[in-house]
Length: 311
Image (cartoon, rainbow, N blue to C red):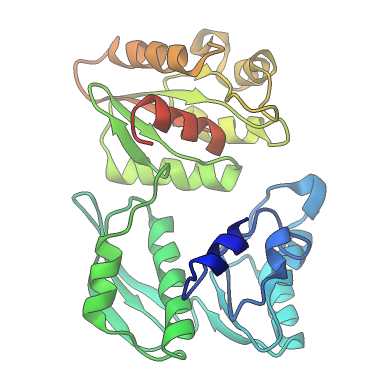
């Protein structure tokens, strides 16, 4: 349906995100002139493999013959697999840390200020209205991809780059959806995503007390996600998205108790009740600096955005 819509528009450029893996994903029917592989992490192990090398092998399947590959920083073994696949297909590789880099990054009100070195030049004073170091690296990958596709690897107009990044919006990624107390939503659904999330929260905010609202899909690793979140959450309310793949609340609660301890875990089947309880718990012990963080599932975050009028 997406490809049909793109053709009917028609679009000048289609940015197509892989659903799972790469090699056998439905999106891989497209002959992409540019492929972007962000940091490979553990996810969908049942289908992609139980090592980063195996997962990287699946990811590298999106690189087409003679294409340009923009490669974010990787674990050494995973990077080797991807580079080998790119070489076999005669792809031009643009590597973070070699050909491109985040030269400077400063936290700013509402986001961050970046200096990025692309393959075509250096771009300074780039305001990115997103939180977290990981978003700076995502911005770099996007910049390099556009340089490759539009400018043949050369430089882009700096004023256009500046304006484009200043207008970036990423719904469901450390997004503020309500105040009094602050309610943030983030679609982190694997351990690597959770680590990026907590690092961004620590860097960008000064909350005194955070209560989590967490749901997960049944095929994910909620124990690992909760273990990353545990040091940062005072308490957690487990719930579920209205999706047939969502983990049952009682099963998730059992896992949460193992990680947080029984006294810090609460259960609500409905998301609206979970958010209400979390807000009450967050404000119970502090006069200011209370926050609710909804995370663990993209589906849960999507429903939270609807609940709070953001979608």
